[in-house]
Each structure stands twice: as structure tokens, then as C-alpha cells.
Image (tube, rainbow, N blue to C red):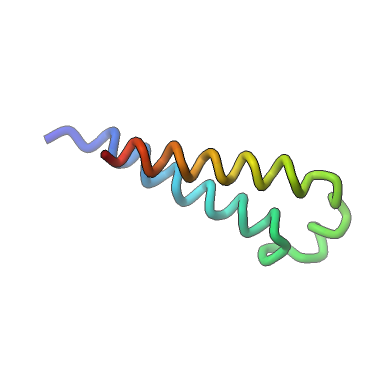
Length: 58
């Protein structure tokens, strides 16, 4: 059984979740205030990474 697609999906889910945590200010809140203009692009990037990760699990 080949698990490469599953592992790719899990890696994308975890990294997308970390990016979303940073974008919403839950991870490194001091740094998040300094890069205020990157909120929306990071939310879009994190959300799309999570969607791709979910789709690659199936």
C-alpha cells in the first residue's frame, strides 16, 4: 500500500493549520502585529493548503 499521497495530505494539513494560526494571531502574536498587511494573503494560503490536503487524503 502506497502512503505517499496520504503523507502529502497530512503534511499539507499541518502546515496549512500552522499558517492559519499565525494569520489569526494565535501563534507569535507579537510578530503578527508587525506584519499586519499579510493577514489576508496568509489566510487564503493556509485555507487553500488545508483544502488541498483534505482532497489529497481521498
